[in-house]
Image (tube, rainbow, N blue to C red; front, side, top):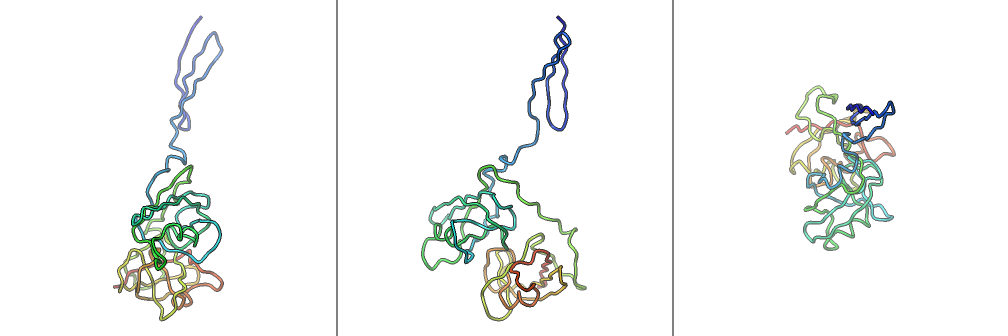
Length: 226
C-alpha cells in the first residue's frame, strides 16, 4: 500500500488529502474568515445617547448602521436595565428605540434620552455597514467647511420652532451646513440640543431641504462651518 499526502488551499479552506491505492480521501478544515457570528458581542454606537421614536409595536430598534434582523443588546448604564431587540428598519442614528424598548430601559417617566448606554451586537448578527470615506463624498457647495457625520443619514425631529439641529457629537452652538445631495438644497443651522444621531433636523430645517413625504435624507453632506 502506498501513501501520499498533500495540502490543498483554495478560497480560504485547507484540506489534507491522502491517496491510498489510488483512492483519494479528504479531511477538510476551515481557514475561512470568521462568519457573521464573529461580530457577536462587539460594542457599537460609540456610547452615543439613545432616544425614542414615536412608534408602537413590540420592542425594537431602528438603525442607519445595521440591516434589519440584527439583534442588539442595549444596556442603560444608569440603572442596569438591559434589553435585546431586533433592528426593524432604517433610522437617522446608530440605534433609535421604539416606545416599548425605551420604556423598558428608562429610569423615570420624564426621561427622553438615555445618555449612558452600551450597545452590543448579539447572536448571529450581520457585520455593520461600512461607513464611506470622506474622499468618496461629493462636496456640493462652493465654500467647503470641515466635513462631519460622513456616511450618516440625517433625520427629522418633530420639534418645532426656528430651523435648528440636534446632535450626539457636536456641541450646542455649532453651525453646520447640511446639503441634500439628491436635490441640491442646503441650509445652515445651529445645533440647539442633544439628539440621537450625528445630526437630526427639526421640522423647520428639514422642510427647507427634505423631500415631501420622507423623514430621512440618505444622501447628504454635513459641514461644520464654525
